Structure formats: structure tokens, C-alpha cells
Image (cartoon, rainbow, N blue to C red):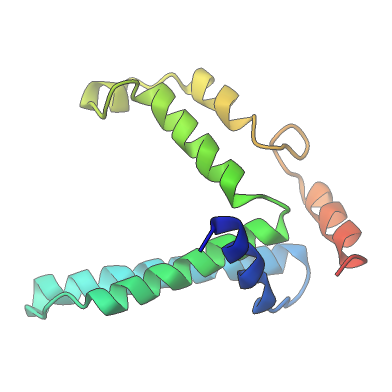
Length: 142
């Protein structure tokens, strides 16, 4: 499945709960929950010697992706742009491959320049008013 198709399909099953900030928080807390569920599979392997359940891990990764896609949907972000920007940032940080030296001595100004190429709202930093305005303007279209 193409990522933009996934983003569209994920929106179909996303419930709005109580305004822009609360909807975002719902997605963020969902990401935290799914990440914890993935960690728990590994904890049980280490602590209780249970075999790794890769079917469950893949399920939780899918759930995590659903929350990520919907956070992006709620904010008008295209996941393809975010993924490309992430790779561009990593290429700037690690021109050849990962090195500890480059991980420690990062050019944060250069990375920020790359990050700001994501279609910005208020120069890349969103205020609560920007957030509410964005969501209110999109409510009439849904």
C-alpha cells in the first residue's frame, strides 16, 4: 500500500473527540500507548523468557502508524513530505553512513534549515491560535 493511500484510509476510522488540541493529544497518547505495547513484547522476552511474538509486534507497529497518519491528517501534513525531510536531515547529519562522531557533533542550524522546508504554519512553529484556525477552517470541508 502506498503511504498516501494509507493516510487517506486511516482517516476513515479516526474519531474526532473534543477540538484540535484534544484530537492531537488523543493521537500523541495513542502513539505512546502503542510504543509501550511494542516495548512490552520485548520486556516479556527479556524478563520472562517468552518468545518474541512478531505477529503482535507487527500489529502494534501498524497501530502506531495509524496514530501517526492521523496526527498528520489532523494537521494537514503529507507523510511523504515528512519522510523525505527526515531522510534529508539524516543525509546532512550522516553524509556517508552513521558515525558516533557525527551523531555527537551535529550541525543543528543546517538540520533546522532542512526541517523548515516542511510546509510551515507560522514559520514552522505553531501557536495554539494557528492550530485552532487551521482546524476551524478545515471543519467546514469535512
